[in-house]
Image (cartoon, rainbow over all chains, first blue to last red; front, side, top):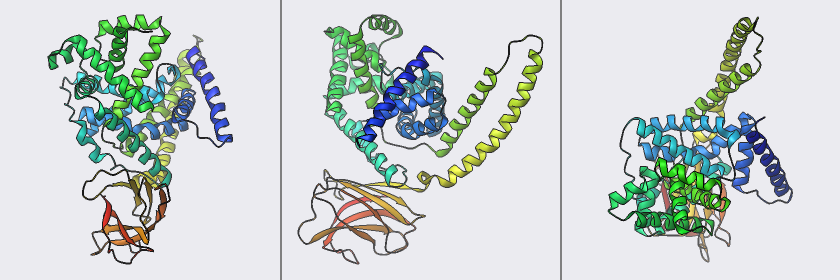
Length: 216
Length: 238
């Protein structure tokens, strides 16, 4: 067994005991802990755990792919690529670097950017975030538990969106150009006709504010 | 304490906004600086959260089926590869035999997966449920969050309400299904919201509702009414 796999298994054992302790005390384990445990099971080639992880992550990852690619069929192919990567890379996941959700989300962004570069197409310009919440609720769901889960995710999305909208427009614009349009800070500075240092500071301040507000 | 310029780079790195050369240099700096790695992790979490801000969509069920099929094949292939021997004399025969076994396993596995997928399609309630978010009919901002999960084939649903103001003395909220086959909205029951503005109720419309176009909540007399009288306070199209 590789060191990475051993490390993941070790984390999984710790997480599992904590999650079991939470369950025994009637306390809910955090979503991040549950995700980590599930991914550790995926690392040990557990297909059922993989199926659970797919159910949890596929909606947000697919939504991002559709948004950036502007093509549902291609987004589905990208999503398939991402989940195959998750299956293959689960043993090397490092919880110190990011949460499972962030790991998967940034992997999706990266795969989508690869596809966009491959086909030499310009990234779709992401429209203002002001109009994106109109479709936020119109998703499929199942019975009560799934409905509540989806509603929670939508609420989370609304909360993050609201926090992003509260950022000063210049910070938000710079962050969105980097995230959705795959521009480097040099390109953003050129596009907005601003000094490089200004763009760097805007991005840092914006991300820090976003993190602080989300963490509250 | 990490200087501002390094924090700037951490943010750019997390967003993928450094060029390849800058990225490589930053990774080298980060590898020997635990505090900086911590900042990058925080920045990554914030960057990933931006991905949540796009409109929510669910992929078709067939994507999951494709992915599960792929990983089942990979797992199978990995197992077969792992059992191969390095003995040189009978290696070609062993490979051929393994190949035959592998083909057999694939055939059996394919049939099993097809059965499982058929069961999944049949059993998956996700494919048969629609989620509707209700909002104020005149577009007013409100703290209330109302979601309806509706299953037409079962003619039942679940409504989840948060932050709803009290209905008031002698009043009740009532849920209605607006159906294309019915002239008037169909009564789907009175919804009692608790003191915290929360309700989580399973409902079933009074009449068959096969083509529901919208769900609405009105403010009615206590105990509800057979036909809507009061004002619509929340509505959402299916």
